[in-house]
Image: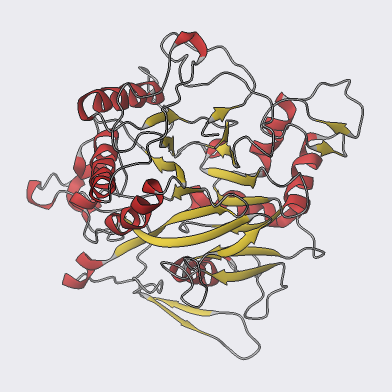
Length: 461
């Protein structure tokens, strides 16, 4: 059954927002219902840290058991989960309790304290954190959570090599954070697992690796802007000829290999790191080719072979110094034609009002549609989507997020994540983004359904 349902505690919505949250649904039947559950622990892109990007994925073929949850990014983690748990429990609930609503519906929790229950979920149900890139709004929740972990179950940090290298040098180095890793004399609380761009070549069936119960993963490198920082001083001086490049990302200057250009690192006797910083940074033409790596994560339900894609931060190919999204779409298109790819979780950090020069490696609704049109063209070239009857759902307020058009992406759900938090008076950016997506779909008629996620949402796919 091809459905997408959201489950969260009902909250009053300002007028015009009622279609963001779909009608509440009980946990689907495992045999015939949706195949995967995606819990949006954090849907934001900052600057507020309490809801930064963080997701948990579960195969519905598995119960709430050890290693049933795969974490994808963790800008927030324990505090956000504790808040979600609190929203779906009552003060007079006896312990242990089984949650009867919310994204963790059906889960038995052993403690009275919400924080203890959040940590219980991390300790017992999450084995692997897939990190799309090392920026703090995608990693700080994981880093902080390590302080509450124990050594009975070593956690796995799975990522592309550039992200692993960033953690080795800049996080678990005994300076920014204790070396909790299994390398360079660390305490082995966290093990590194390097994912291969495009899948493991020695593994059949697409190079997917199993990282949670019932879930296989394949990672593809994408681009999240440029790491050069020189442009900020020029911008402040008002030099029109030296305005920031539209593809730049606010980031430490890390090369494509993950090694900082101005950081000399040595391993002294006995392990650990010895670092020397070049404080007189110089820039050259080479700095113009300093793309920031991010990741598109393909997640496959083992039982049904159905898939979703979760994107880390990403910029549009049309303005990228290293356009890589097209390769993700080349992988995705045949999966859509075969009826296996069901949903795409992708960022829209800003509304369409944001100028290209200040996107800093992010997307807006108009660029999401540029990317979706590229995907749609590939789907059409392969013969189009499967000819399944289109299913429409009624949402809160009697409105439907289903597209009115049976286009090449008919049946695909596009879930927006990483929306920058509202910090000024005016319209809620999530509402604006939803309306802009609706307008683009009315013009382009691709057939996809669009949802703007919020922290605490649960998508059954």
